[in-house]
Image (tube, rainbow, N blue to C red):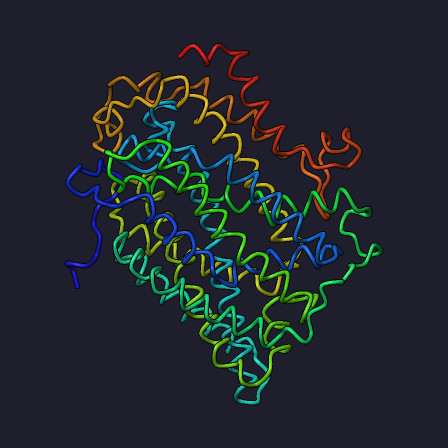
Length: 461
């Protein structure tokens, strides 16, 4: 067993281990995203009051914009032979790279918790309907625990195992999705026009933009600190174009299919309180066993890929912890959040707000990282990037005590600006108010981070 568990943390991947091809990204992202935790974002678009084709347009436009923005982030890990957070140490300082680790940890913590929550709900609801009982807190708790345990096992095994698992998950989930479409087709109405009285933000365009952000743009951006986890294993004999093109395609295909399917299920079997409950209740009896597989198998890829990255980000923040220890710790934390939040927060508001807030933080970080990557032409001094991990000091990226304070300041300004530009269900920032209630979080985060960087002269570093 020990031989199949990856022990490599955020250290430099040697050329001898960089044997993957860009096409491996399709396996990772398609298998990882064919899960209930991604499908639930399609449900959100219908919950916001949009019609079927309005939801489709928001998902497609948002995913395209997000994928175009994030695709180049895979170059960080690919060029630096490590994960994106450590690679960003060239720009934020070898200690300042903890900004990227912090952002990545928060994002993946959210998505692992979402995976455990949605997978557990499908498992408990499906089991309850099969056995003829109403799921209670105990059933839900056991289902959450089972999903969490399965995800931990595969995340601990590491990169090779996750790629292998996703090569199985993708076709298996593809079959289950097709079966679900067949089962729900008679209940689906492509002409479903939504309900203007239920628009989440009161009118069409602000609500459509909210859907495009939460169910479209946020998906790719949630991976912006993770893409290097996978691209660092791609041979350095490939070209930048190969890596960027494959990352873009993998995110588009991997995110569009499950999100659009989630909107399809929401139209065919809508439940305003729970995507999983509507999915199970609206399905014929013969689909219940496949649905249980959706809950379990669909959680493997998404949960493992995020938990794998979570463990790596915590490993970067606390170098004394091994990757195994980091992975288990963050898994326990995510599971605890699911148990604490299940009966406390409204799902629609909680998911929407957390996604938008974290997307603002990630957009600011990504904008600065990609700007510096272009400015330095992607040149990294690999030994100097690992100074902090080796508990040393000095090197090209030491700046001020290991921090590039100007870059960190620019990230803070961009993040705050992004948060102030959010227009959500129960929060409208002052910048969004100035924009007549339209969400301007992404352009605000990107532009203000660059303005702040130039204002303090950080662009000269």
